[in-house]
Image (cartoon, rainbow, N blue to C red; front, side):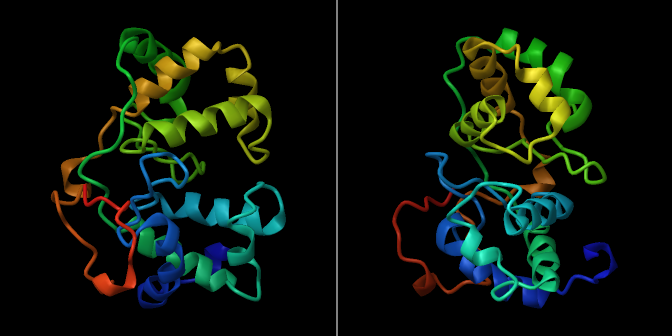
Length: 210
């Protein structure tokens, strides 16, 4: 149904005001992994995840109140997804310890690149998310949740695939993934702030301007 809707970026910007309270005005999330970077994410992925939360297919208690039909229409979901996709990604992100990268690279090329792309660019048609530029702690947490079955809307093939991964495998491949970087044209200059938001709107010092 959402494929029939034309995105409205102005409305998407307004809808993002609520998202910004946790994800930051730039959409860069937090390096501790509690909230992901969503700036630059494929709009189809954003739409799928918001819809899955709305329908109860993904457990995310924090997000549930914001995705209900009373708060967010399908048009709103399409609009905010389009707004997020065109936002520039952070100039840097938190990476892993870096002590097993060769193993992580081999695993990524063999197990992950076919779906998430050689450089972590994702696949809009298949709803595979971009993972390049994403913070290590968030990627690591999601990987464990997928393996443990907590991320209920995860791709079935991926769930079956990583069942055989050890903790060492997961740490290594996520460490490598966290070092994949987007095309420079998709990345904000260091110190950039989102001009769509007055600085008075945000208040927390934890949102570093990477």
